[in-house]
Image (cartoon, rainbow over all chains, first blue to last red; front, side, top):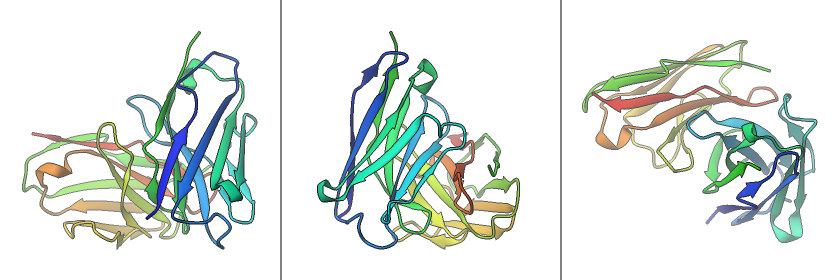
Length: 118
Length: 107
């Protein structure tokens, strides 16, 4: 059974760095073709794709956010970490991690709401 | 980045209606398109991938079609549990992108 769970702070201040952790089970990120992404959704708005890390450590980022994002993995802990620097109130959103093998996301975490406010 | 234009942004329909939602890509994406359903407070649920392949467990009233730049999600006979927001996603080239969503509401 594949599960993913996001964790991290619910509240961050403007200019701070956000660190989110995706802890997963039911698959290994060392398996060929396996990938994990981060996707966010501001309240009442659409989904926004942020980043992806692959089994071979290849990484891909949103064009508009790439200077602020870093994605990494710890295969032994079954975790993927996303850091986002210089947080702003417009970054307030629910952040999801999700698994893909072919480009579509069949498995998602429940999401974690991050509010950016002083 | 490839831009996905989804339409309509919302629609009102009745149970039993046939509903069609469209996504148009700013450039050709072959069949690298997925469709999701999202209910309030929940993560998106995969409905269709590769433009027309039904995800396991998804009712057959959902279908997808299209290739290149124009794609369609059809719900053949709307059920009460289908009232939700629907998103398309392209995975042809990075960065992957989502449409803006279509909210299906009860008429």
